[in-house]
Length: 560
Image (cartoon, rainbow, N blue to C red; front, side, top):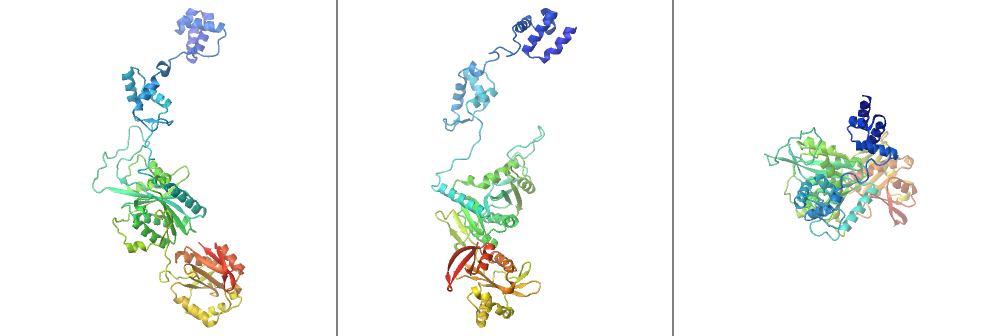
């Protein structure tokens, strides 16, 4: 009874060799016959164990070398060649490449081997052998361009890359834009899979045939290369040039102008076709309106024909949106907005999505007269792909001559009642030291009246906000080079060194950009006026040129 309990307890815990050695050791006390009867093992097994104990073969392999079933390749040496020939007729790609792929299923290959060679092997074994041969399951990859590629394709890529790098280095915004494919709204099947309880798939319509008026959405994506953020304008109307620019406008108003408060230009990367194609007149006229409203100089670069997949928005935004809503029916607008807004990546992509219910009309024709009015500058050698759209300078009637407040000062549009107070400023020798000297009173009055009446001059008086005391005068007017607008200012000596110049000139720069849509402001001062030069450089002006004018060396500073 004791031997039976002992053997039955130990045997399940031992491997084959350990069983032989254990039973052999037990047979010394209880005999081979009794051990075989209790364990159910043959006498040959026990005797083999005794021999291993006597020879000291207690460690090493459990079975003799060469035991077990032979590998399929060893049993059928031609098996790999059979499989290679079967899939050869169905193989794509260059056979010299290290990776090829097949369209035949594993079970079809299994059946072919069985019928042709009368050899049975499991479909899993077929998969293992295909992997040894270098095959794998692969989907299509869009890599081949329709037609011949443009001879300047690489040069355009290099130009885009250089321009993007320069803009980012200057902290100016760079966006990549495009429209994602239209999506059906409703309980329709959506490609992909999602985790659910077993055998409880989501129920959707069996067809996506039109039922009444089917709603489709056009997600217009804007990917910001500077900070890995994105904006999606979810259009429910048509994908037109007007819709494309409206999407960029909404991004700028909601996010862009807050993320880039010092921006004066914007680089837009887009495809050469579609609603933002380089041949679209409506696209360019709408961009002109956006430039006028925002004051931004727009730099547009188009990818060459057939290279839309190189557009950053495709593989930095759209592919992740598709992954995020894979297998989920887009039942309503709110669902789409939430799915897009919750799209994230390992690189911490942040996406904002807003619906756009505006009705955009198709078939809008842009007249030659309207198109020729676009302030466009083409960049050679491919001006059709690369161009600049600049905002138009506002006229005096269009600009809002408003009173501006700073922390300590008030900037007010010049009025006739201010003339008497300004005469001491224009006739002060210390003030006019670097401005051509003291001017006669009648000349001062004439100049001030002309400034008020001029359509291109914007004069302001500068006062302290707490006591209304006049501290200076400033004017924005055409420079000696009439293409430029110049910012000029004067302050009474007792207010020098108090920071009023820095405070008020900042406000005037903002006025030039927001109200006059100026992207370039110049300021000319004598090189000997060291304090004025230092102020301009402190405010972000850079010296562009120096020359002799009025018998003195002048420095021309530019703010862009």
